Length: 105
Length: 105
Image (cartoon, rainbow over all chains, first blue to last red; front, side, top):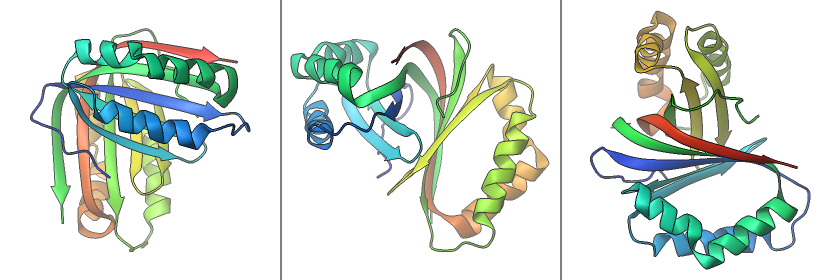
């Protein structure tokens, strides 16, 4: 789904990744992390798709909220498994969303 | 692929969309627009994936370069076809990438 975010400014974390062939609970953890993110203070929404590359964009009300999510203990464990098992490469980009606009039929 | 972007700060355009069932040259135009974007001043890279939702993130060196790309004539035509035929909903978010980091196996 397209995230219903509040008026700008707010923040986005763009997480772009390439997967290894290893499963080992990947989908289960990804889904748990999405559920956990939704409980965090300042969470605004998430968008996700994977083809050759996976792109997950999560939206947050402040940099402090992004930092708290990065340091959340279950998330730290998932990040470690990500580097050891699930991802061959990734990039995280912390962004300030300065302007947005949309269209609906 | 994961875009090889320069040191921060730079800019990102997050384009999230839902497609209609209409084809009518969609893939052809999408591919042409990607090729055209690559010729634009200040273009830094692009990442794209579609499942339930489509996410395309393009990276740019400045807001002026993003504006020039938005106003490029072939791109304006594609945007119009997008609203009339290809997309049932979309959101465009203009962002300043303040920090990034990555991992490679």
